[in-house]
Length: 385
Image (cartoon, rainbow, N blue to C red; front, side):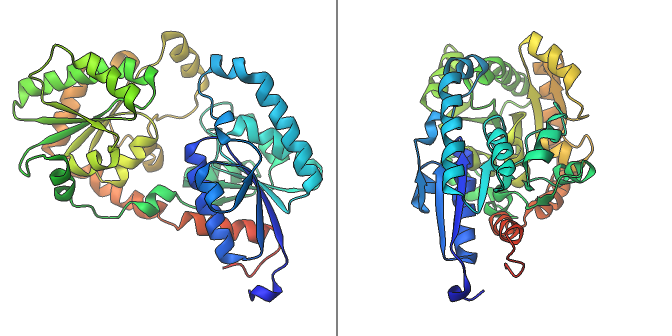
């Protein structure tokens, strides 16, 4: 499209946490590359603001984790959402894009679409796994769903929701082939050492449940392979202190806590013991054999076991549609079981890693550009490229 032919566009976006800020910034950059005459309004973090977003209030006001915390801030959240809906109805953007944060954004989409404003949701909630009736609200409130994973798109097609699979931005940013040696040099690890990365999660509750188990698994592994080395990325200073307390009194355990650097750890290691979550996708992209574990509070596990429809927990298995990666959930997650599974991957993890390469290629679709193209086509720019 020639720039002089481009009508001005007003795009509203709302992101609720750091991961959404990253996605939003990439999407905004791609939209502007395809349509120069564009204005961005809404809520986002520093990356989205650097791309030109006029943020109505700090994104951190929406970034709340945990049921109790949400309940404590519910009046503020509801009031902010009500004001946003009123503002967007007054501003009449050409399109509203809710980035993740489904409990907040889906209601905005529902009301704006009813008011005649086009709506897009970027990053599918896990409706395919649990609370599947949410798809009815999505179908009513969403002109286009942008999914990061292909099996999500299939679910929406089956439920008559307009959908576009765009791929995953992480798959775009991580190279198809990575050499472990530069990462090992950066971390001061011997080139010939066998290294296991331990990733027990980024939240305090996850680390409290899985940290001691992963440390016990390391001790079990050392009894079998005394020369193993372990690296343990801490998501922040609070997690570092939490992990240091767990390791107190074990000075001879060869576990090195890293400040962040989870991707460097994944690049450097030979195998990974990891909490179920987005980090498993990163491990897949770095082609590292992995063993997945997760533990919940007993009541939460009892409830989720009855609600979740998916046969698998980890993203690699969901993507592969098979039990490619060993999963150990709740009482099945013991140091011995995890240790034996890690030893098996250290002996030969090629079955996993070969499939990981195929899955990486399937997700490497230039996600931001595809998402921008889909949005512009929704708005009638059929020649968007």
